[in-house]
Image 1: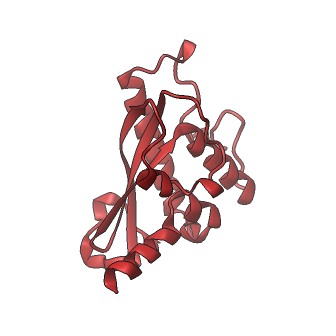
Image 2: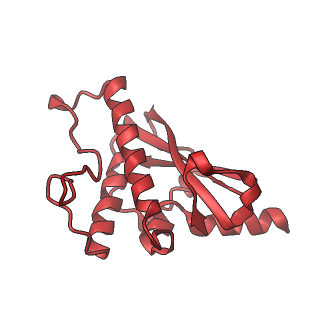
Length: 165
């Protein structure tokens, strides 16, 4: 599958292309329901903390005429980021920036005392969206097993096959 940014997405591209975008965040006092939880692909996404309430970011993935929603915690994004850095010898600084100073991922702590306001969570959502788009635009990243697991791209093909059959 090949990635297209959301602004260039159209269902006419069928299942050869997909788009991914973080569309919202929500605070949950318990883990997501079984259907959402299954799409989390947890076996390959270490970093899931078990404390609640927790903030989950909803990733919308569209391919062909299908749409799925994935729920991820920030800790999963952070683990995903660290795995990408390790696997791809992409040099990131310890403060989460590239060599030219560009932020790669939203910092874990956006404010003192870990007070997460709606404004801070909206800012983090935007930063995570920028991070995700940057990763997916890089050559061959949609073929990377870490990306495939994090976005459950292997499940997209299964879903598409079941819908077409």
